Length: 289
Ligand code: FE2
Image (cartoon, rainbow, N blue to C red; front, top):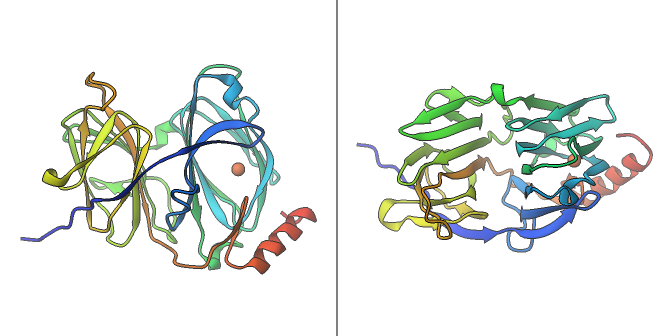
């Protein structure tokens, strides 16, 4: 017999409405007062709207240095273009894992005038040794993201491994897990995560019960659960408090190895020291990105 420890919930956080870019309305879930960060995760934004006025202004040219941005599109199309000649369109179900490293300047603009735009952007820190690495993209269309069904749970594996199926993303520094999970009410899904990795579940449709059966706690739509330590996550699709219809729950489960390094952060620059931050400003202003 092996004993496993089931991860519970350390806290539940709801995002704060905010706007970014040229006036895009979004919900900041990590990177706001209630949850300033969750090492190695610096920020999580959920965007989701049917109103073009909320997204049409997009994110014109802006810089990044010292970390990674991960964009996962659920609905809508977004064009990105950077100062190194990299350009493309993110379509529904696609993932862009961008290692900004020593610096890029890019724009992220809606490639549509109407309809729904929905997805997530997650910022993941890089360790000191990788902050000034060359910029790099890991970009995958929906057909490249493996989908696995485990006892009724439908799981898209962006990063990490489910039932021997590996997601396409490689990042040895933080060894991330990024799963998109759909659970009908009553359907259960257990997943092993390295003990010590920071982990969260963000529910974006329906509701999910998290934890050991008799102590499971319901996480509702648009709530993020920070998970306690342990080696296994146990989830079960639940009927949402607001919605009695048998709607499947959908959630992202994200985990990664904490870096435990000092963080010096200002807007789109995330370094280890104040001196490095000032250098980042100087390099950006003098066109060295
Ligand atoms: Fe960006």
